[in-house]
Amino acid sequence: MYPSVTPPREVKIGDAAAFAGTTPRAIRHYHQIGLLPEPERGGDGRRRYGYDDMIRLLWIRKMAEAGISLDDMRAAFDEARDIEDVLGRLEETLAAQRLRVVGSPLGLLSPLVTDRLSHLPSGALRPFDLDALLVTERIFGPLGAAIQASVFITLATHPDLRAEADRLDAADAALDDTVDPHDPQVEELAAQHCAHHKVLLQAIEAAGLDAAEEKLFEIYDAEASGEEDAQMSAFEAVTKMPYGFSAARTRCMELTAQLLDGDLSAGS
Image 1 (spheres, rainbow, N blue to C red):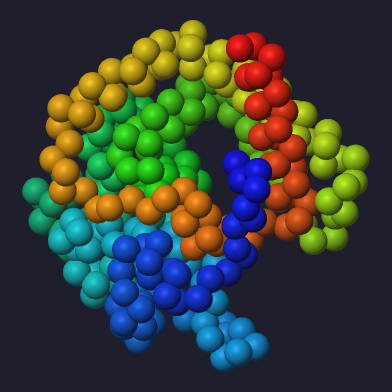
Image 2 (cartoon, rainbow, N blue to C red):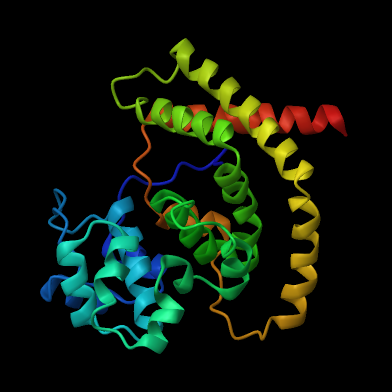
């Protein structure tokens, strides 16, 4: 949630590079070799990067860290739309040992995250789920993403909650620039998000996933080497990670955060 700062719709190449943990020079090279489509330029002649561009940049960075060549990535991205398909395309060119590590998108995330999700059946996690974990890991580190995994475990194992989450996602997407931020439907949707979040938390507690989260802190403290990338502050990340939210959708998120904060205050 972003109660006080609105994330940008698009960012310049310097901010894109900073968020993805790479350099403007590397991004320009990705454009030159066809690995990253070159976005349209703004009125000032500079490139502007959106959410989809950032997601691809983050996956490129993860695959490069796993030892996958840029040529292999380019060939795979040319024929596939999401990261699951991309890695599937790479299976023909990667050695068996490497495939066991990165044969699925989970293999590109940190072990702390992968361990929490590895028991789920194939296809239980959606591309959007994996993208969200990727972004969270970049901002809050492996521990933050491992804790967020509780949400996706619960959605994967509760079809009714997944169906409601899908309905809410579709309603969010409908809050485009044609919708007035003060339209009553925005407040109604925020209330629905709040209600769904509370039911989701109850399911997480019922499954004992909250207790598993407590253990994560112990595991992470014991295994952290101090060599992880320095994580940017949440405030800084909001200014660098583009989401393309309309004014109506941003207000819906703010109202949802206010409702959840009110419930927490009332319960304390």
